[in-house]
Each structure stands twice: as structure tokens, then as C-alpha cells.
Amino acid sequence: MKKWTFILCLFLLPTQMLHANEIHLLTLDECVDSALTYNMRVQLGELDNFEAEEGIRFSTRSMFPVLSTSFYGAISTDDSVYAFDVRADQPLFMGGELLAKKRKAESVLEQKRYQNNLDKSELALLTSQVFYEIKTLEAEVKLLEEQVVFLNKQALVQTKLAEQGMNIASEVLSHKAEIKVKEIELEDKQRELELRYDYLLQLTGVNPEYSYVLEDIKTNSLSGMDANIHSSFVQMLDAEIEQSKQNVKIAKANFFPKAGLVARYRNEEDSFYEKDAFEAGVLVKWNIWDFGQTQSDVKQKKIKHQKRLLNKEIVLQSYNFELQKLSNKLKTKESKVELAEEQLRLEEENFKNANTRKMQGDISSLTFEQIKLTLSNAKTALAKAIIDYRITESKILHLSGKLIKGTVYE
Image 1: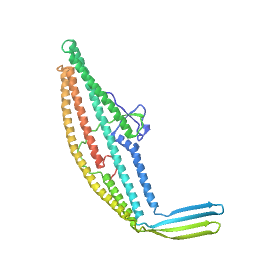
Image 2: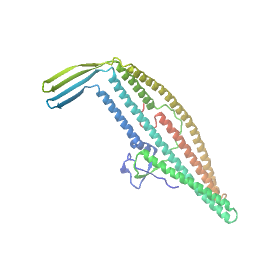
Image 3: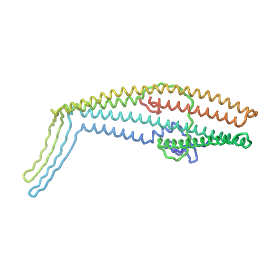
């Protein structure tokens, strides 16, 4: 079989450990770790977190005094005027608006962090699936190569029989056509395999420099698991609900008067007078009547809050249903793995017997090659069954929040 190598440079691996001529065994965990470190989606999530943190700082600073200044100057044909003003404003009572905005900003940060956890888990799931797809394609390519080799040997035998008049030429041509079909199928699989490698390269966010081969899929520890809903997903929904709750409070704040301290120094002068004054006091503003605008705004915010509460229940029901469906599917996949293992044991025993019979001259080389190819089919079937199991298992781990090792969601 042609040796498929995956060209990757993992920055997370110490470069002094690698040399240009070495081939490193690239594990699934290394692929996932690299994706979670260098993929641009992860970097975008970190920027979202920074943006939300700035939102908290902004809402906190709005509670402190604001110092402003202004200057006005004008010159005319018979006069000149200027005015200089320095003013400090300190909010005292805003109907709970400032505190609600701060709490909303905090819930936005929580939502972004939980969303970032979910995005990382989805990226890990996608990386795992592409990894498994590559291993499936590698097994299919290997099997097709063996099939092509066997068919060519079979065609050679048929050609010799046709030359001896023991076979008709049409059967030889038909067999060559079958070989051509298999070769085209093999080329298609090889191209698909190359595309999957390129996609894995993009997901892991690394530069091609060293040669890597992907590790074989582990066949041990195939067992069912208890599936519980992803806590980050629930917490993200709760953060969204908290935001809608604070939006209601922000809207209700417009029912109340707003008061603040004002300190002001003003200096102005023209041709007739000069004024230099300092003043301090309390500024109170209250919208007594706005034709029901505030009331309508509050009602809209309450409706949106109720919608988010209801949406949480709907989404969780769907989430739990999907988990249950995958759990049942996993049991089916496990049974298929067990069946494929039993079939492989039978084919291995058959191959051993065939090998003995071949050495004794009881079967032809072509029959032996046919039995050997059947063994390869059984190995490929088992590999694909295990990969199907692992893909389903990864989906459950993702939905349960357990796919990324070392990450605490609770």
C-alpha cells in the first residue's frame, strides 16, 4: 500500500525534538489540541471575550463622574466674545439603570465564555470526525489497492487460459473493464483522502513542514456511557435569560426620575462685561408623560424575556432527545463492532487453514489470494465499524461537555 503521510508542523510540539527526515506519529489528541490552540475560530472567541470584558469596564465607569470642558470664541467688526466652561457630572439615581446595565454586561461575558466553550467542543468534534474520515479512507484505499492487485492476477490467469483456448476473449475484456472501474474508484478515494488531509491541516491551523502519519484508531474500551446535557450549553442559555431580565429593568428605569450632582465653573467675557462664576447643585430630570412609549418598551422586553425562558425549555428538550438517540445508536454501533470482530476471527482462522492447504498444494495461488482478500475485507469492515462507533461516541462527548480533556465546565 502506498504510504500516506500527513504533512504538518505542530507549534505545540517542541521543534528541537523533530528533524526534517523524521516521521512523527500524530495522535488524535494532538490534532485536537493544535486546533484548540491555533484555529482562527478559537482566536475569534477570545476576541469576543475581550470585547465583553471591555463592556463590563464601560458599564462600571459610567457610574463615576464625567468631567467635560468647552470653549467658545468669536470675533466681529466691533466686538470679541469668548466663553470657557468646565463641568463635572456625577449620577446619583438613575432608576436602577446603571446597575442593570452592569449586570447585563456581566451576563454577556458569561454567555461569551460559555459559547466559547461550546465552539471549542464543536471544533474538537469536527477535528475528530475529519481524523476518523481520513482513517476510514485510508482503510478503503488499502482495500481497493489489494483488490486491484488481485484482479490483475486473476486477469493474467484468464489471459493465459484464453491463449490456450480454455477461456473466451469476451470474459477477459469484461474482467479488464472491472479492473478499470476499480482503478477509477481507487483514484477517486485517493483524491478524497488528499482533500481530507488538507482540511485537517486547515482545522489544526499549522504550517506544513514536517512529515506525520496519523495513529491507528484504538479498539479498546468500547463501552456505553451515561450522557448528560452539556453544562456550558445550559449556562449559556441562562446567561441569555439574565440579559433579557436586565433589559426589562433598564426599560423600567425610564419610569423614574434621574438625578445627579453637577459642579460647573464658567468664565466668559465680551466688550461690555466679564463673568467668572462657580456653581454646584443637583440636576433632576423626569419624563412625566411620553404617550406610553416607556410602557410599550417594558412590555416588549418582558415578552422577549418570556420567549427566552420558553426557548430554553424547547431547546433542552431537543438536546436531551438527541442525546438519547445517540446513546441508543452507540449501543447498535457497539454490537456491529462485536459482530465484525467475530467475523474477523473466522476469516483469520480460514486464512490459516488456507495457508496450510496452499503449502500442501491443495489449493491454487489464485484461490489463496481470494481468501487473503476476504481477510482484508474483514479487517476493513472492523476498522470502519470501530470508526463509526468512535464518531458516535465523540458526538455524545460533545453534547455532554466531555470531549475536550482538561476542560472544566461545571
